[in-house]
Amino acid sequence: MGKSLSRILIRIKRSFRRALHDYSNHRKVDFLVCGAQKAGTSALASYLEEHPEICMADAKELHFFDNEDVFLRGAPDYNSYHSAFNPRASHKLWGEATPIYMYWYTAPRRMWEYNPELKLIVILRNPIARAYSHWNMQRSRGIERLSFWEAIQQEKQRCREALPYQHRLYSYVDRGFYSEQLRRLWTYFPQEQVLVLRTEDLRNSPLELLTNIWTFLGLNPHDEIVPRQVHSRPYISPMGKREKEYLVNLYEYEIRNLERLLGWDCSEWLIP
Image 1 (cartoon, rainbow, N blue to C red):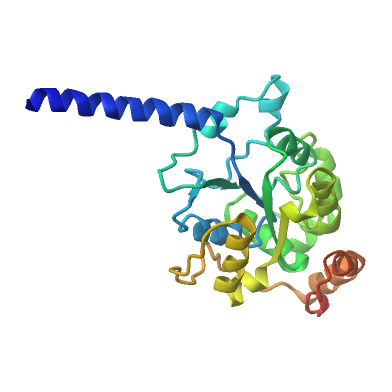
Image 2 (cartoon, rainbow, N blue to C red; image 1 turned 90 degrees about the vertical axis):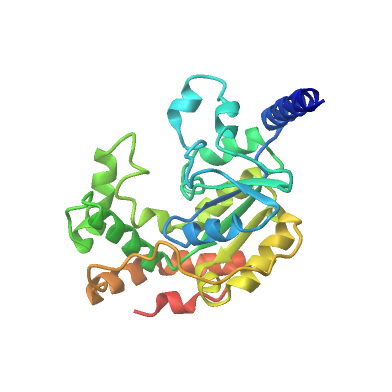
């Protein structure tokens, strides 16, 4: 009797695994945190994976839709992409966070071709602070040897020299021109499928921001979350006055354009 029951349980377990495998192969990712880099996407992804109905990818930044090799080979291997997810029975939605997707020129179309019903979450930070945070990260990793001033002055030339990887390297300033990136997303996805958030709200009122996300994704409320900072990196030194004034002048038109586009007040971003 015991052996028979054991065999039955083994068969049930195998059947469940096969069913889960088949389900995973036909399943599609439901939402993406697709930008912006250094705007709080690590913290946001960490919060999202705490919701009992969300299955986040095993690792942050899968870099699937910005991987040129994946798409140059022909039909992309979506099964390989899906293998990064290990869903449980309670999970209703799959999601992943790769902040370069919004910035990568060819990614939005690929995302739409994969799943036109995708919901996109974008979080935006003051582009001046974002640029300095980006440079600080590269500097602390030993990738960047130039000072911040030298780096932003030489960015265009360095990006040209880095072809075809110009979007990945040294794009401290260019990534902060958000309005063009948002319009590119809206070319493929209706605006009601794109939730645009502010880093300040993630920092100052995370529970309210997360409530907006649960509503956007159609999930049940989940309040059992403790606010925290994730991957907060100390700066080598504060940004200099010269650099800040230069970037305020450079970004002023872009920030005003973004205000009109989103109905935001970003005047604090322009304080030197």
